[in-house]
Image 1 (cartoon, rainbow, N blue to C red):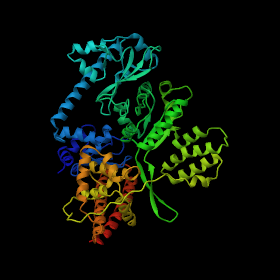
Image 2: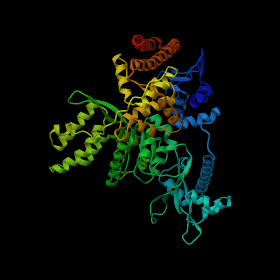
Image 3: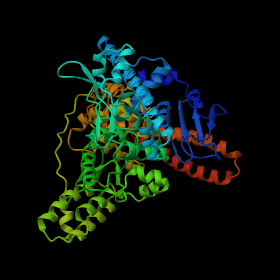
Image 4: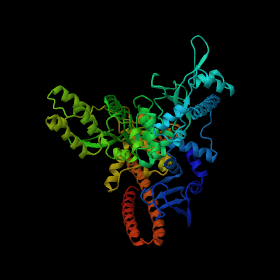
Length: 618
């Protein structure tokens, strides 16, 4: 039993879910109103203790295990869910070395030191009528300022260090936390003076450092941050992410704005899915952090030349950082190749001239909602920005614009949209559309992995074995999909795997196929970490024993993947049967039963096809 399975086995899923919602016993299962979408009529949320799973049969139409539940509820990624459930279950994830324990203890101490600084700055703000009045004059409520821990660093060279030294801390600790700095001629001074202070926390809400804004317009620079420390890396952190995770998941959208005030104002106005980088362009690390919570990202930067350039830089980073989905394309010879389409939807908010997001949100929260609704697709925004109303006939300028826009068009997943954008670009540049069709992104070739020898694999768990094969050769996914499509079934998906850890690993395999910068087998290793990476490597090492050149091995492998799908279909049929019993008490029973009967018929058809396919591979 793996550590992931041990934790799942120890945690009572009904008890855990029952702590945050009301569940009603129904036979051996539990039902309730889904906590992830608004509903008061049909208790469509079901917990199945025997299998350790849950499912919403309503608007969500999804389910999973205990890991998936806490990830969705708390806005955590898999490592965070694993860590928290391990603590609940009393399971040690991995033995720590003395060096690791010492390092973690030191970091805990630094975080505590930073929390003390938050308290100091908060207290100073509450006793600084001028600065507090300025913030309230900008429309910020006391509750919003408190929620974000906004404070004020007094105009003093040693007020903070005197406060912390009195508590028993050492100068060296304060330097390590980035709160004070050494003088060249000896002594120390407070790093932040006469500034509005914004605590910067990581995605789990732990203190990492500070952002600081001037309170006196005469001071410069306008913004400064904590220096690079073991806790603070401004290229990896996003202001407000700890409080925005749940809202991003709920809205299935992350909004990136430019400043601390923008984030606070949007959260205060009810738009809790806003985050901000710290005075720098978006980085690949920050975008990957957001992608954990939603693939829909909106950039809302200033409506000036600098803001436009920042937006373009952010788009370039996004194209490099975000995962891609493989898209089959037939070439002129009728051969299929797979091109990567950006696995994210990026839109741009057009802000009113001279307005920042905080001004829009605090003046009229509905106006911000309207702006988000009208956010431009990235291709349209860039075409408008680069071409504008001008009617340039300069051929070189047209070529330069095409080189910037065409890669964005190629990233669009929908082929009809891609075609429409190519036509639109050709019209606006007044060039032949065929010139747009001939452009293709440069691709790198991949080497074929050699096939190792066969050994006995019957004893392997089907799920782990199948994952191991995909990890060893991610492009096997395409072959499995063709086998499923031949049975008129949908291709392989993360839902074919029961465990959230297995789903995380499979998604890494999928993402590894949607890019050309690295070999897929290297890419999935970069996308996983911790326990998930250890487990993936173990699965892959076992699959090294399979030799597809041996007779009947391909049939045996496809049969194992069919069994995965059969397990999923049978599980859905069992859950559907339970739901059919549950809706008997509803007033709209006839309508509900017709809908369920259609779903059941579809599943029965899938099961019949799989039965026939498996019988032919015995």
